Image 1 (spheres, one colour):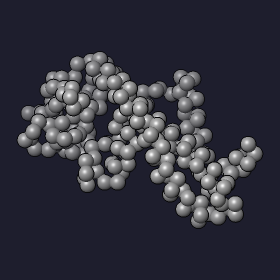
Image 2 (cartoon, rainbow, N blue to C red; image 1 turned 60 degrees about the horizontal axis):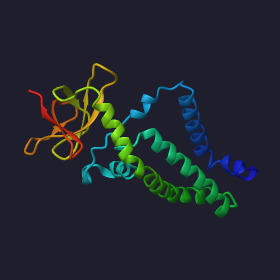
Image 3 (cartoon, rainbow, N blue to C red; image 1 turned 90 degrees about the vertical axis):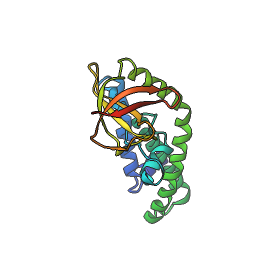
Image 4 (cartoon, one colour; image 1 turned 180 degrees about the vertical axis):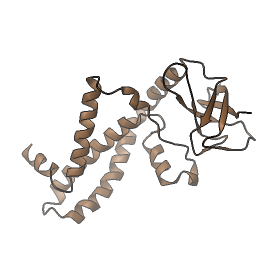
Length: 206
């Protein structure tokens, strides 16, 4: 335990240690009711197909951020990176070389991303079912909203629809085939829900 603590507070491991403490405090306060767990519903803009999405969008899809709450992903990523950093530096960096620690951190990051994906993959169906159940508590078809993703087309996009009950709903949505793509801020109308694609069908609002 002493060796782990000594590694955890070394200058190249300390940032990850601080992040891990913050994550622990967040979940502790959540359990105590001091933080509203609706914060877990925060979504990244994951409308990233192919080259348009770039590396960041690809990374989000890799860690299942489109289905699993972001705080769970960040918590797992922090935990894995901290554990790997402490273990790898203890084993391979006895001289406390900062450059070697940075080099190992890059490999650590990609390894941790793979671990997060492996852990969250089984959670996707459950999280998606919970999200869909919450979204369908109040009818959304026929309601107006606004495009929140960078682009909304017939493949993917996200829209936000205001609800009388609770916070606005952030929905995965698509346009019908043949419709011109919309951009962030455009007004839409929800017209249907495609169960096969698990996405809402929307039209530009007249």
